[in-house]
Each structure stands twice: as C-alpha cells, then as structure tokens.
Length: 84
Image (tube, rainbow, N blue to C red; front, top):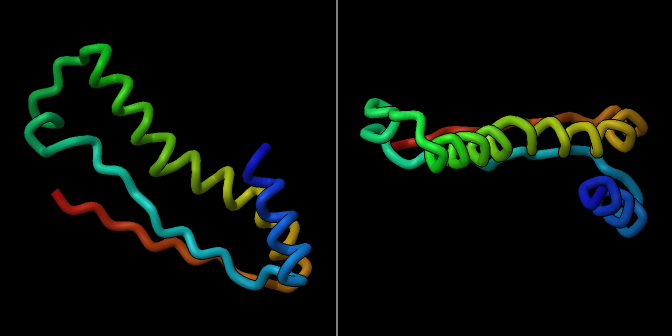
C-alpha cells in the first residue's frame, strides 16, 4: 500500500516519526444538496468519496503511522472542520 511505503520512506530519511497531523476534509457539495437528497447514483458516489476522505483516509494513515509512533511514544493530532 502506498501509505505504508510513504511512511517507511519518511522514517528511513528522517530517522523517526514523532507526530502525525491529520488535517483534511471534503465537503459533500452544499447544504442544499444534503437537505434535498434524492439518492441518485451521482449523490451516492460523492457521498462515498466524502466518506473515504473524511473517515477512511484517517484510519489508513493512522494505521500506517502507528508502528513508527509506538517506537517514539509519538502522538496523533486530528484537526478537522467543514464550513458550507
């Protein structure tokens, strides 16, 4: 997986990992679309993408970083906000 390889390369270059800062988000589209949900295929695809960015990418990134963070007693910091 690319995320794991990226962390391995970073730790190899830097020597260790002390902090993982997660700061990304994707807003579905607009409040109007959310309140007028029709369940179209396009809406489901955008919702799936939003879930991938706003949840699953945090999990995947944290999973890849954890072995390195455990070695240094490092931390994970999550910053997230969405404004419409």
